[in-house]
Length: 98
Image (tube, rainbow, N blue to C red; front, side, top):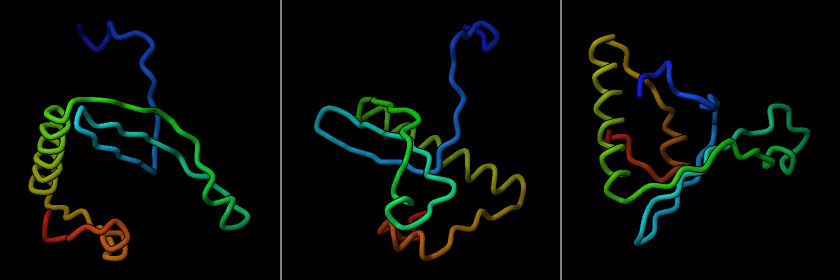
């Protein structure tokens, strides 16, 4: 199906994700944070934008393809996409894994 034939496709922005992995698949919720929180509890209020579900195999291939494409983008544009160390630490990630 050509892009011009796609009907009812929702385009949305998200700034948060929650990922759940089980023996049967991967569930990803995409959310949008409160833009003007008054306090910490107000900052925790998020709106779920969408939920996707897929197989473990598809999620693994998707992660590999996403990494490949972003690395190609960085290489071709000579732009190194910076992520602050505090973000890696908060997500218990190691920047060297990139």
